[in-house]
Length: 104
Image (cartoon, one colour):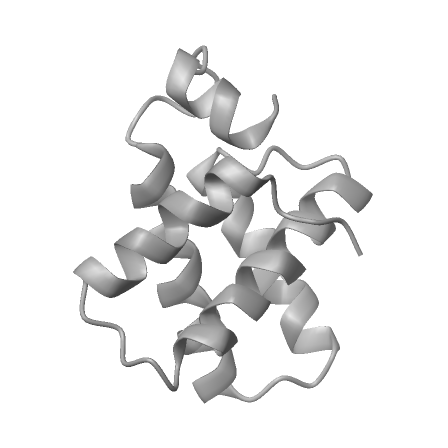
């Protein structure tokens, strides 16, 4: 499994705390982000494109994840998108902050 780039990891942790995600749930959120990150790189899906999550969600369903787990994964990945500022068009250029944080 690929490691999350350290700069992105720090940004994500800060956002989890700022958004009030309870400490006992943060490891689960980090797990979903790692799974998503790995999935995107394995299947050549752009991790900064919000439209890539539905493909990931379907993969979770094929792995028999519960709807509660998929909902938690969705929230975790939504916070990741917020971390990187992915409110941009799906195929637009990444900002310097996104390129630096994601290594792309």
